[in-house]
Length: 414
Image 1 (spheres, helix red, strand yellow):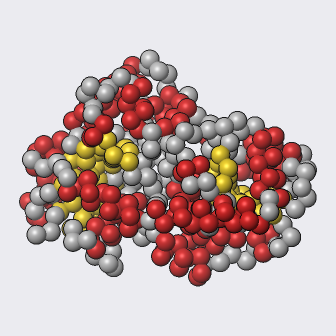
Image 2 (cartoon, helix red, strand yellow; image 1 turned 30 degrees about the horizontal axis):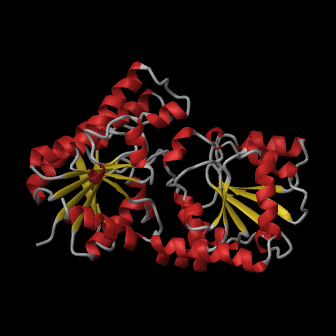
Image 3 (spheres, helix red, strand yellow; image 1 turned 135 degrees about the vertical axis):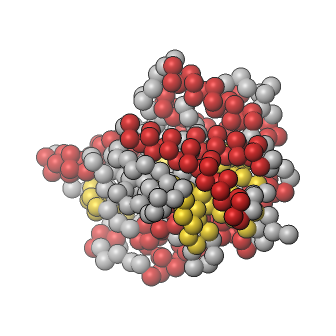
C-alpha cells in the first residue's frame, strides 16, 4: 500500500510555479518510488505580490502535470521582513493546523509528516499534527533559528525572543521522531548547546540540497544567453549568480577585482537586489573595469551561464553559523556545471573541500580571494581538469534521486 507523505514547507509555493526546488524534487522522486506525497505551502508567494487564490477557504489543492499535489493554505499577505511577515508566518501555521485536519477527512490521514523550516513554526505545527494523527513527524532544519539571527546581528544572544526561540528549538529536536539537517556539522551544533543527553546522535540525519541533473542539462542546452563576455575565449570568466543585497557583501568582490592584476580575468555578477545601484555607482566612480553587473536572470538560464564560466564563486558574508556547514542551492548548480568552484568564506563542512572541487578560503580578504582567482586562472590544464572532474563527481552524489534514497531510508526506519 502506498504511504501518504505530507511535506510541509511555508515557502514551497514558488516550487509549484517554477516546477523545481528541494521539496518539489523530493515529491517527484517519492512518487516514482511508490509513495503518495502532498506538499502543503502558503497561498502567498515569497518576496512577491503574487498569491494563489483560495476563494475564502482554508486551502485549495492543485496538481502539476506529473501528478504531484500541492495544498495552498490561506496566509495573510506581507511585504519585507517586518510585522506583516510575522503575521504571515503565524497565519500560515495556525491555518495549516486546521486545514490539514479538513484535508485528512476528505483524503485520508498521512502516514508520515515531513515538516520543514526556514522558520520553526511550520515544524511545530507538523509535530502537533503528528501527535494528533498518531503518526511520526520528521523535522527538517534548513536554517538554524535563532543561531542565524544571532550570527547576522539581528538579535542578541540573551534577547528574550532569542531565549524563547532557543527553548523552542531544543523542544523541536527532542520531540520530533527524526531530524534532518541540510548542514553536515549539525551534531557539532547540538554538542555546542550541550544537548547531547536529550538528543542522541542516531536521531540526527544529514541531507544537503542538490539538483536534478536532467533538468539542469535540459536548461543548459535550451536556454542560452547571448552575452559577449560569456562567449569571449580570451577572458577568464569568474561567475557569481545570486542576490545583490547588503547581506551578500558584494562590495568585497569589487575590492577583490581591484587586486587582480591578470588582465584576462573578469568577474561577471548575475543577479539583482537593493544594493545594485550603489555597487554600480561605486564601480563607475572607482573605474573598476574587470567587473560587469549583468542584472537579474531567470533560474532556467543559470545552468548555461555557470557552464560557460571558467570559475564559479560561492560568495557569502563570513558568519559563524557557516562553520556547521553550507547548503547554498547555487553550489550544486556549480557542481553540475563541471567547473572549478571558489568558496570565499570559512566553513568546516564544505562539499567543495570534501570533493576537492576547487578552493575554500579560511581568510577571505580581497587579497586572498584575488590570489585564489589568479591561481586557478593560471594553473596547468591537468590541475584545472582535476577540479572540474571532481565537481562533476560531486554533482552525481547530490542528485535528487540519491538524496531521495536517503530520505526513504529515514522514512522506512522510523
